[in-house]
Image 1 (cartoon, rainbow, N blue to C red):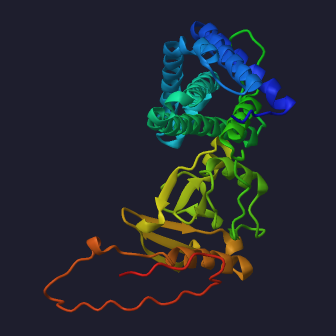
Image 2 (cartoon, rainbow, N blue to C red; image 1 turned 180 degrees about the horizontal axis):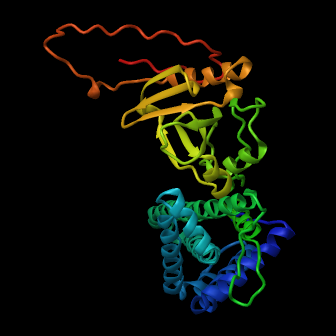
Image 3 (cartoon, rainbow, N blue to C red; image 1 turned 30 degrees about the horizontal axis):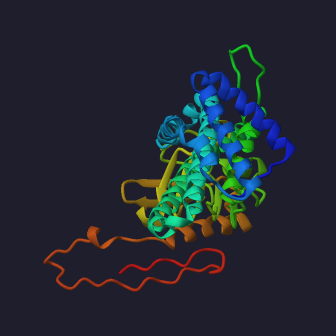
Length: 390
């Protein structure tokens, strides 16, 4: 077994998360701590002598029922949190805001319960391997034990990591929103309040070490095309999107636009990723950290860039279910900014597509002609190649 070491800062924050666990899950704390200490001691003894005999394994064998029970309890808690975070962004944010303490407690509890269970299973496997007189008969049992233990352990640690990532991203998002607010623990309980971000980060780093994976929360998105008055997207906006967009999302383009169809309220941001484009009010993004509308690129049917006497340059995006019209402010009606705005339309037009199941036929046109798609201008290195209709 590999023993993980973490920094003093992480250790200190882990102590704080342990305090939250102890306070919120008092009915499980003593059992959980006893199992944790018992399995750690057994591993230390095994490392000291170099093997696991019945004297060592026997100390933890009698606790198997408790080990299973605590693992199932906290695994259910964590599964419940993960499930609650699956709906839309607004309800997810509300849940995180109202259950931050429970998430910290249950993630730490499962980390302790899963660690104890994993050590128990490793000790059992080592005790089977120590029985050399029956090595042949035990080989299949040992192989199955190792495989199932690794699979179950990876799944449990993955759930913890997923939950902590959501919590940490939300806490960092709150800090990035105007007013430099923080996401606090301890509200209304008469205890010291602690910022959740470093506590979630401490647990996440511990989990990352145990999973032998790097711990990181995305990089600041850098859109290749930024349609803004000064030609660049505000860093404050990018910092918010860093935590709003799903982990690993590549932001191809971002624009300051006007929603002329009133699908949302007020001025808007339009962003394009390799899979979706989003349209959200600027107040929703800047003040609440939410993206209100997200549409798959595969739903785009037609894109037209044109001019409106009142609005100037306009962009019509016809999707599977609706028509979206956006316009640009006066600064985007000439020069480089006009080129950028038109480039945005070109980018979206490059994915225009009508699936075969949506195509119609009529006997009045027995031999429909489908023209070849024209090649759109632009740098092919900056954006994905356009998809071609069948």
